[in-house]
Figure (cartoon, rainbow over the protein chains, first blue to last red):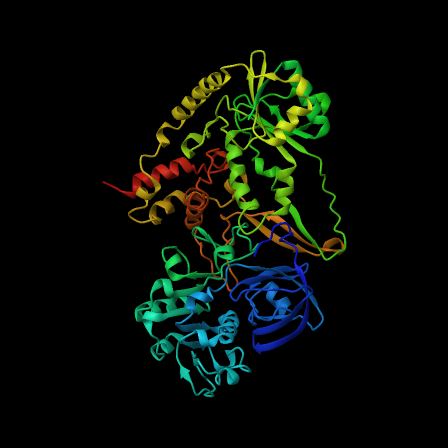
Length: 276
Length: 354
């Protein structure tokens, strides 16, 4: 997106339409911007609580909808605590969209393997909705999703309908299941990768989740024979200005906010500290 | 571009006119610093004081970025009908800018004016500021532009006017359209530049370059960065030694003329919301920390190495020139005298032991 003379630090006003609970520490906030807001799937925004602070999130709704959007947010600190407390009708700000997003065209005609962990499913949901809008262009789409426990699964309400979609295969795992109410895989998300059938020579893998899961997920994909240039990673660093200027999200020669947040493993594999 | 000659009397007249139509900043010696560092600051001169303006021998302590990228700045005010910007729009003229700081501005211009978008705050200040440069006539013990691909003398671009003192006046070289405009406002006092002044500039410059070469003799590297890094880019043990004494004060980053990192603060004071930009430093431990506690550069040697990579590798990769201008302010300010020149020599010697 070009920001020629607009003040790039000026947030767009948005009204909170709803704020729903997904899990014990994850909410989805429904927002209506006062002006039309377009984003490409995988691009992120800076979410401003006026007077308090801002933090980066990737919208979790379809990029095809431009009059409203959703953001799924885990409560981890000062700003996200305030976001969880938002009520219908509250006013917040957003800046963006920033970054490059997913290069969807490169996935056409291929097996698309999506590997998600925890709240990392949020940006992947937006991607999934975009892929499903042109599902005929992909060979197949496989979603492998892992959570800590059945209670920690985000979008519980949406999985039943997703499971009926033709061209989409869903595999889910939980790290542990104290309640016993889970009839799918119990184990780390990486073990799902052994179960899905992917044509390696004609595939891409897209990974998003907590750093530790990204690290071992990527390791496993490489072991299985996925090519580093076909593994797409969401590198969520400390993006602050969103413009490649403030420096906080520096990742080697890149700024995650402007050059990413999606990178292929090939692009960043020699940079130190990518999983920290 | 054109060059002119101006007499000493007319030079004083020119400065007077600059100081009345703009905010003229020029070096002022507060203390000659016998036995200690001289104290020289950028001072705003009023028309009656311009006679006291002297040419600085080398760069000032204050990095030039402070004029365009202040330590603290409101970058947006929302959501109010008409934000009340009190900021002056009067032109600013800075006199006595040195080649190293002009190179630093090239880095800042790349960061703030290009890329994803333009930073309006920086752009407006940059636009209303004219730079009058002069070649260095002396060096300080930290000056090392010659090691960073620079020169003590202003090259072909980046300034509006460049001034060279002569016995009977000054040479004024025009480097930009706004610079030409300044000359045109007082066109009658400018004469054609004497033939051969370039040779005189060159020979003066050669003397200062020789001083720099002598002063930095032991810091001349023999290998390229790639060569030093060929057996392992990270050279962790060497970096740990280099960073051992670091007290993590970030003085090096704040005094660096080409460092641009900042932190955004949201405030709700005075009945309106604002985003305020503050200088930040990659040497602070929490700088790269993310939600959930991850931190790509936990250790101080990782952070020290990162700033060297940023200046010497990443900016070269991104822009085609070093982020370091060799001004030496980071060495000057460091309480434990971590010296980028010594660090690089240490890495070179230690990277490939025989």
